[in-house]
Image (cartoon, rainbow, N blue to C red):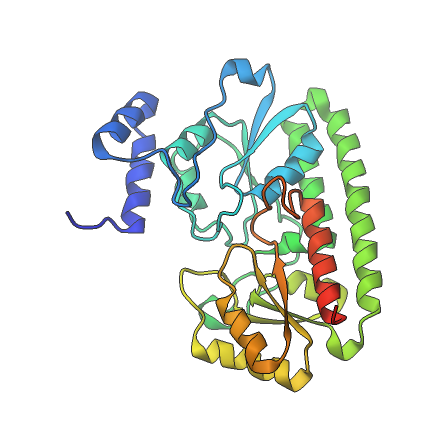
Length: 326
């Protein structure tokens, strides 16, 4: 039997959703569609009416947005992520269970800026469910090279200053969806924003202690353009957006040359991709491999970045330790 391409799989899954829940389940049983995601994770079970207890169900495209939304929603709404902890968001392929959960949600929150390349096809399966893009109001940083030249860098949430915009957009749309609990959403959003502002202040102070000529973020993916813009850093990366490929010799050579020329003390990678190429950069330049940053996904509950606030704190501490040579 010939292998089915990723695009064909997605098309099949979307067609499944359009024949109704009963038809979808029958199709899964007959055709071999599985209830397991491409990332090897078991999906969350469908939320029943008894689970809801009158609460709205908010679905987000990835775990970082889910944590943000949960902090604003508190106990007044049910919040879940489509993708699982540790998943790579850019090339994700929705599963049949994702389609069922999407159809049953009251609101879906996404990042936009070309992050969720699969989202438009996903939404076409249940046009009656409203979806909101949380980067509305953020000035995008455009990618300057490769096939993505001129397109917006999607990783706006990595800057605490942008995170405040995300939180306010979540607050605004939860108020519209569930006006009875508007006061709670307002209070939760303000408390959460205060915590983000505290990290913003810490990041500014920490970076100010680093010599100007050493303020570099060298990563695998170009996920730190917004931090670089907002906090006076220079960004160096192997590739602009995570893709299903290894870095090229040309990309590795480019980063090696920059690290050597500027005597950058540490290089880093992201938790959802292989660090093999960056380890090669460290070996060739004498720089330290400073560890991983968390970007597209939170860590597990017992990991160092189990919430968005912890993700920011961990990344800040990892960066500063690396640049200080610790």
